[in-house]
Image (cartoon, rainbow, N blue to C red; front, top):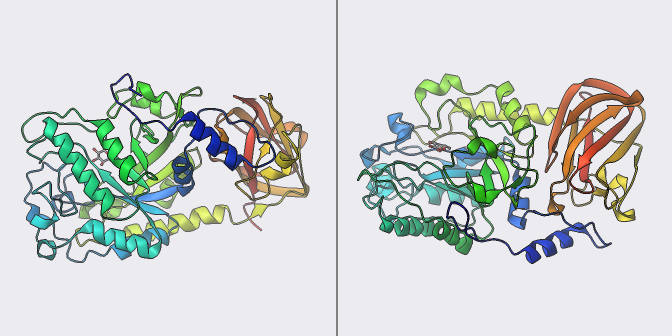
Length: 474
Ligand code: FUL
């Protein structure tokens, strides 16, 4: 399919998507999917929820954010590099994967690429025999941790940048990265497109690049401002929209789009499934600097980001940049752990309802209790044709809660447009627009015996796989 911007995105055939959704939906005659629906790689990615970014390279040694590409590669020398330490710090804090800047805008390759003379092979590190991607991939495999790569198309070093030849070079580099280091869960394409060493800008061959990823890593999701699989959220603060659609009119955007503000909310009737990802750094900069060791984000800041990303139908991609020794600094390691403990304590006391009822259901296999059975593959579906519905929870006694987690069953499409939560006597304690993969609502501690989830408006019959309330204490 050729888009308005001239980019061609290979599309999953509609029939395949429908079959996949139907298989996932159960045996008893399930509700029909509502397009667009996610591909299996997108569903898998959405469940990853939070994972880390690693910005690492010559900038780690110069203090630059955007290296010029003229840096002496010898400056890259992380003498104590320990990828096991990175992975352990992240995994111990509940993160599920890591995406590394294999090549940032300065063009320096963290692996010994055959297609560049600006790589680890020209550095002093390990006498030019080192390979950061190799070390990270071994550490990830050992820890069963997901790995992804960031590869900047913009290259301020490569002599062929700005010519058609560069597109081939970039495709070869991609091929190296995607064939030598095991499975990748995500490939991250930066939208920045500046001049190369010859003063020229590149016209990128996106169909070529996307084709290489699909060929060698078909299970990886591809990120850019415009997908094709997942999109930038439109800011680098880690904040998704209060309204957050996975649906996007993808053909209207391209990497580097000036209309990036529209990416925050997506579009209710968007043509493609391209959910938002929230990238944000734990420090002021993307790369490590000694002067920013005291500026690591607080637990409260990280909590706000988590609830505004994972809690709003997005994912949290938290950048934790290694220092010039090649280690994640103690300040960051400690903060990651504190953050994890903090969000885990928020969900330490789930409440179990005694009875669950709905004003309608699609059939007995999709009755109301499927929304509270703790199984994300089962779901409550309102009757066909309903665009509003109510789920009523009775806890049998007065309970106190301060958090509500709602999930739609996304394989059948994102549907809910408007909802509220009310308690005994009809008092509304929370309200919102979209739900999507996960919507987390934090409220002041509220006591009630009965709680209603009222879906006021929906694109098609509402389908919820999870409704869960949490108590602030035992
Ligand atoms: C931006 C880049 O220009 C920044 O340096 C950083 O890598 C960020 C994640 O994406 O577009």
